Structures are given as structure tokens and as C-alpha cells.
Image (cartoon, rainbow, N blue to C red; front, side, top):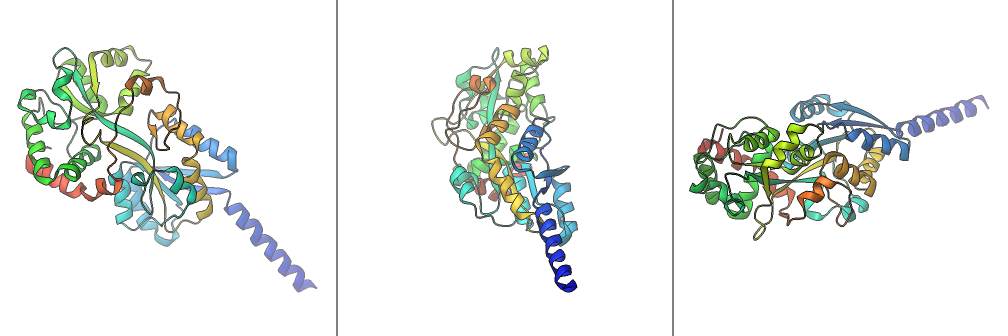
Length: 337
């Protein structure tokens, strides 16, 4: 009788531990946006699953996961840019996920077997409306045209945003064209690459240069800013959706993947599926000025509405990752620092 009671208590304890385990999710995040707080708190409210979050830079988090090995407490890695997600895949950090919810909700070109895009941002051309005409910058190729000599500014060629852009050019137009393009852009620099996307927007607005590329959520953020200087800068620039007559505008993503040693796998998959829900998709759009990946979803973001609709390049995210190394070699040869 005593033995049976002990055994019953042991099973009860295991069941309680298992239940408690499902109420926790350990998230390693390289997204550093305050607006994501609402995303996480809503998940906990809906499911009762508490999110423990560690934030850091992408490479630091990946190295931490590798060092932790089989004992890693991390369930999910969430970050920005297809190149970074692909690096985690190449390092063997992710585990495959077979979810009918994710397969239905997320378009095929925005997912792989073990990581998924949950929002997109477009890389557009911005120009100073006083010194450049819109027709001069209709395509990415126009950035390398002699007419823009001394007018282009850029962030570093080694930054993932620019690597992914060049990777898309390689995939769509070939390596030779990509290298000629990179050399042409370098020849048109107004200054050596420096700063982030916001710095490029401000430089174009101030006339330090006349043309640059930037991710749309930086533009939308400045449009919604309470700072008069941000809104004034936006008034000085025009925005072009490149390549509307051909491949469409290059897009990149924020995404996440299940880690292979995840101790709370069921909770992790629930969170991935939650990120594809209507509520979460609207958080991405309305909170951080990104577009949902779920097609046909209505959002309420006046800045994105102002930017308008566009044809997006539907190049598979796998291809962006595939050509990253070649993109870096081309930039290096072209002197795109």
C-alpha cells in the first residue's frame, strides 16, 4: 500500500512538473524593439506560458547556444535578416518543424524547413527631392548609373541588409551583373560608407548626398516620430519602390526557428504558430512598421499606408542566404567597404 502510494505521488509529481514545464518558454532574441513587449505579453495572456527572454547580438546568441550544447535552456532564436537565420541553420542550431498552421499561414517563399519569416521590410531607394528626379532612380541598377556620380551614400557593404540586397541581385541577374553593379555604386559614392539606415535618410535630407537605400521601417518610424527634425527630414526626401517593372522590390525578414535542444518544444511551436496569428501579425505591422507575412491581412498603420502598395520580389529566402558569401566577396573586390 505504501509503495503504491509513493508510486502514485511520484507520477503526480512528474505530471505536475511536465505541466509546469509547458508553461515556460525560453526565448533568445536579437530583435531589440520595445514594441515587441506587447507581442510577448499577449502570448502569455492567451496561453498562460511565461516567456523568459535573453537579448543580445545575433552572433553572441548563436555562440552562446553552441557553447551551451545539449544543456541549452533556449527554445527559440528570433532575429532579423535571412542571412542571420540561415547562419543559425548552417551551424546546426535549428530543428525541423512540421506545422500545418505555419505551412498554411506563411507563404512558401518566406519559410524553410526549420525557420520561418514572420514579418517583412522592403529595401527602397530614397532621394533628395531638390536635386534628383524620381525617374533617375526607378531601379537598383540606376544607383550604378554615371548620372549619379558623387551622389550616393550607403551603410557598410558588410552589413547584412546590403549583403542580402546584393544576394538578390546575384540570384536574379547573375554574378557578373552584380559585380558590375557594385563597382558602379562605389564609383558614385558621395562619401565612404558609414552609419545606419537612419543616418542615410538624414544625410540625403540634408544634402550631404542625394540618393541612398534604406529599409522601410526606418522611414515609417521617422514619419511617426514626435521629433520635428525627423518629420522635417522626411519632407525632404522621396521614396521609390525599385524594380516594379521587373523582379519587384527586394524584401528582407524577421524570423524565428525552434532550437534542436529546446526543453519546451511544445510551447515553442505554440509560440511560432502564435507569431503567424492575426493579432501577432498586426503587432509587427502597427508596432514596428513591418509588413505581415500573412497575405490579405488588414493593418492600421498610417505611415505604411502613406508609403503605399508595391510589387515585392518573391525570391525564396533560402536564395538570399545562399549567395551571402559571394555577395561579400563581390563587395570586397569592388571596394565597397
